[in-house]
Length: 187
Length: 362
Image (cartoon, rainbow over all chains, first blue to last red):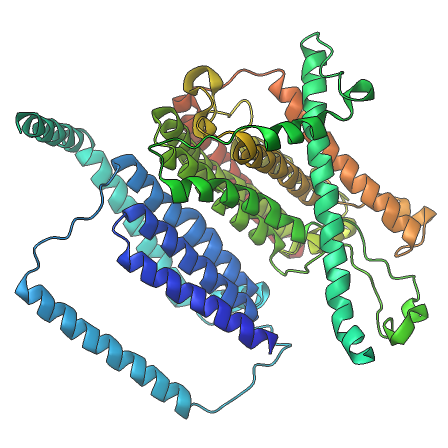
């Protein structure tokens, strides 16, 4: 009873935040809404007896990744998104993807309806830290290693890109900014 | 009627617990502010505040009243919604970790069957923690990392260059030092084999060293330095840096909104001191106390609780002491120190601890 009420509260919050993320023209408001989505999802994980996943969700997504996003938005001082000229093929693409998403949603509904109904065992330890760690380093060792190497490659790649482009790229940005200012002045 | 009382009783107990915990922590925090002004005064050869009440003991309440009755100025060009949101985020994220504080050992010796309506039936222990969370360490680290938004958004929404500089500095600083802090905690977690704060305290009682500060001394030092940076205190107070940035991220905040930031900073100090105490100094555990009082009895819990608060206050004093002693870092020094010294040392400590744990368990 309380669990269901909490689920609908946080699920509603997550959906509301997601909608506000898509509809806001100010990128910072969108970023804050996305943080709201992550925190609501993490609350749902807690009600599903998975405290470790909930804590990691907040620590990594809300606490690290989104802070970087907000940092970049603040640093670049992005202006509000102006409505731009819409292209016809974008409409088609958007419509197609929308239909696909709708189909996916209905498929999930259908699958959930058909799935065997089973109450979650309240004493389950599947979401506990020790079981997750044990599963990751025995049963799923290979996928974990592969993901680790992939992340390492991404880090090295980003460092190399940043090093090589640091100076010229920065000058380019400054030049562009000056050009824009000059144009503004002329107007 | 009886059924209603029975269902409502646990919620009432929890509510009373939350009230006591928050009141207690906030009172200590209020007096930390007074202690800071007094101790700084003594360090600098002054008396400190001594006008409000005898020896200045009512100063925190005078400050609070002043904050409430001051005019609340809102900058004209600020982003209003975010400007109002930022102090709330900062204080909420500072206060939330209180729910996992291990205030003391469980009281197990009391027979609760004297309570009416059979409320005490089956109650074996009264834990001195509000919420038993399996991942207490991660919870505290996660919530405090969300607290960055309060400062960053305050700096951005004020629409002032000093505030923005402070906000940017703080987000860069807190992201950088979070890594070193997390890495220094890993050593303790590996030795204890749990992420539960109470579990770490019990694990320390079983270990031959009693307190993890002995096998994890490097981790302790790294954690302490990162803690100063995470709470934006001297020598890492670059987000406010009054000599360069007026007051940094809260330049444009006045009255009660400023008070919220102020409170958040001191509650964060308390939380970080709590983490230091639990991870490295055995939390509420006093070696040898179990020989004097029976484990689980009320006097044992009271003495342990006082020891817990005392250890935290020692760390709070260290904060004030260092504020009165050290000058501020330069920003590039801060970044170099965090990434090129503190993080490698923390990772080396992790590898060292892995080896120790491996050879001990073999």
